[in-house]
Length: 393
Image (spheres, helix red, strand yellow):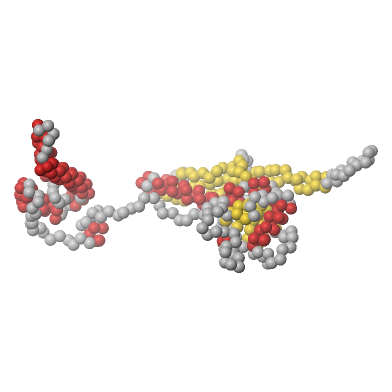
């Protein structure tokens, strides 16, 4: 049966089938559950037909609900012409659905993308709208995880630092004066800074697409993290900027001479420099391009020196994890005792606020979505970090 049958006619056919199935069931009950193969086949056909008609009825009800606009305009589709025709009514009354019938219909407009988009076809072809929002690629944040976390309730972080000492300790003869040593201290202060941004959105889009607000929240928090990573690493320390770890780190100076040093040699010498300063390094930070250049180094036979293309080993050199981040400049490196040498203080963790307090926003049905955070960075021991160019001179 086609989708041109009216719901009332389908319901009538379903009632007839139900009556026939009920008769077979009563007969089987009278015969103590025994059914001939012919009767079983007839019941199977009736049940299959019943399923088809039920599906047909559901589809027709949905289509009729979507076709309200055309019906209100007084237009009659080809399907409606068939349903209302005497030929079709006679066909249904005959109840012989194995036969076909034909009838003439008025010419209709050719169905094209024009008519199915906004013309006569209306909403017959619905767009296949995928859920969610396809976002852009996001950088993986790594620098914060390297250093010690902390909290603060102030806008200024201060700590006392030993800046030098004169060790005059020595063996002393009986009755002799003891030598005096000197220790110098300094009060160091670092400001808590704010990172913030906002976007405008209409109240309609937030109400009609609830997922949009959570998506915007996530994007704004990512924007804060992106700037935060750059500040923690490369903040200039001037104006309203953090004094970054790389900015304060000690310049690389090879402690010993190595003939024709490679990138790997430079990193090992930097680790030695930090160790001689009594701060053994716990990590290495590189740009992904520089780490790839190291992984691609080969011996004279063409075999990779420090990597196996088939393995999933954690990036590491000389027992220290390697963190590859685009926050680093190409051809530079940073090694250091990150947990011991620096600490980040959160005054206010990233927060997203939605408001319509602005009068212009209120009368235009717009909202302001604001994301902000406050944090400070203390680099306790700049000598615990070594920075420089990874490519040998």
